[in-house]
Length: 332
Image (cartoon, rainbow, N blue to C red; front, side, top):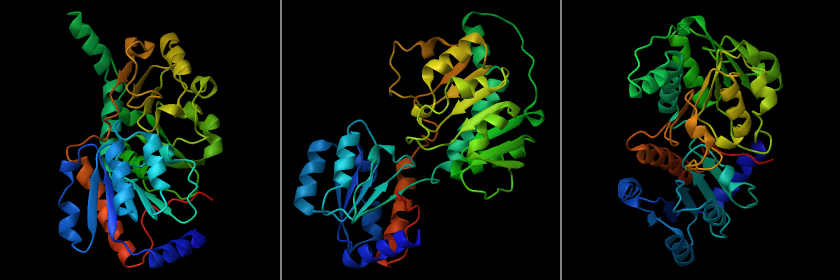
């Protein structure tokens, strides 16, 4: 990391900011916010491929801020990040998988990991409550005009496993501990956290997953995590357990998930993310009564773009002062 920070400082000194390109499908939500704060800089906005390509050629921006959207495909975002004039690319959210592999030798990347963590953690808490208290079953019964009760075990008597204890995972741990749950977690580093009762290394997953009543995924999508939650891992869970995925769809083998939910190998699941989005209308996942589906909106709070932009603004201050950037990504 020291080598990366030294390289960043060299890039900052050699490339003072002048023009910044903002990529967002609804740019009117963002215009004027950074202009008022950084009057010495020029901000340019693009909402689609044509506008992006035109502005890259016209202004040669030194920095780019992007919010992913179907109008701004992954190929375009990656090509923009590798554009010769771009020395700093900022991914507004936490997922940088669309930008990989990152091959820019004279440019750096940051992201917005943690910016919306507390809000996503609320959704995870809501998912646990809904699954635990049979809300999905009651919704189906309501449609059928059925009056039938189902007992539940209080969350304070259950165990949550957080797979990937990062910024979001720590917020999830806070909420779970406030309800009296036992919280265990896996993490690449050995750094503990106040509201985690037991921390395990990543390679201990299969040994500890059977302890959990709820498993919440908070991993990045990369070569190591792709389809990492397949039949082998799912079969190691309790049949009475529930799986929650608000991270990336590609982490879970959806065919294995379908089988586990249909056969009762898993009690239930909440998924906000899928390999293909939107989830195809003919997907068999739609038909599962013990699966709650939401359309990638786990942290979709009103005005989320402004939260992302304010974080980017703080990093602009750091660039101008030749200070290390927050959430600087390393690809060594």
